[in-house]
Length: 481
Image (cartoon, rainbow, N blue to C red):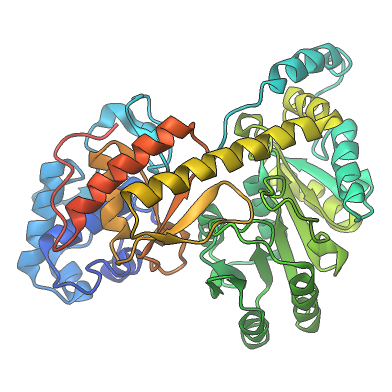
């Protein structure tokens, strides 16, 4: 579980979060300060967290107390830590006026000069305005009621169910619950099925917020490494047998962050492995609609086994500002979720549901444009990488909204720190890792306009040059927006 603001983090826990903080190089105060700084920018070390005493931290990291003291001094100089005699040291942000804008690192900045590559989220389609106008008319039918719909509006549930049926998975509205996004859906399923300390199998890498949800519950993630082409199904099946996880969380449709898709044969093998070990799986279809292959899509995972609970979202297909997602499962389990939902919220906003129902009435033109836009921007990104960062390696994704890049050296977190100094925000590989590894990798979304992507890669090339070779410089000498 991650520390909360005001909590004290012990030396061993900080070491776990730092992962391979000196990346095989000789430990230095600069590398340690950079590692802690990145944890703060990523939101893994919230402002207010009390840091270990110098002696404890030195022992945990197996370095000298002098090195730790110098690292803390660098953090204080850069505004990322504060100390008081007798009270120790704690985490802070360089400019408290920005508050939540910086917390987490991935939030949009109010500074138009900052290019945010930590988010893989597209803007709203032009059809949203018309859908909103039509939804406002339909809202008149709802305002005489209390407005609480823990199951979701019947009209929207019916449209979501129709989409599954059209994909070859017969579904009725009673199998659908509308949520406040796919992450909310996952949290509700976790709360219903997993207790603190129980294991949950995940891919490695995987979606960072899923890892945070598991840690927040006190669950134990069990990571199964991905291969260059996708899933090692033999290893995944063996891990299911050996660890007996309570649940699996998997992204077979344009996996985040790698963009690969599991084919029909692989889905059948995965379903057999889940059935043999009596393991339920949450299948995340958040990126399902961003298919760049042009090929026939494989059947949904729930077509192969009834041990699947599917979650979906309107965020990537239409607009994140709608904050709408859903769960598709058996009727009894959906009713269980509905009954338990009051512990977290009392339902999803009505107007947004009406808007999404309108968009789903004629979704294909919107989605076709979204796919075309994604392909165009991916082509721009790849061309820019070939020109400015030709040493980076990547697999062209089957779909989704991001490129998973091998930067050639274990410097991803240092690169993210250096990129901040060039007004670019990055999501280093460690954010997608259960154990803080994947330091050779970063995720680069292609959701921004082409000219903005080219500018971002030019800035990244400059940042990459500042962290290779040798120890990273101290890039954060001014507050970051």
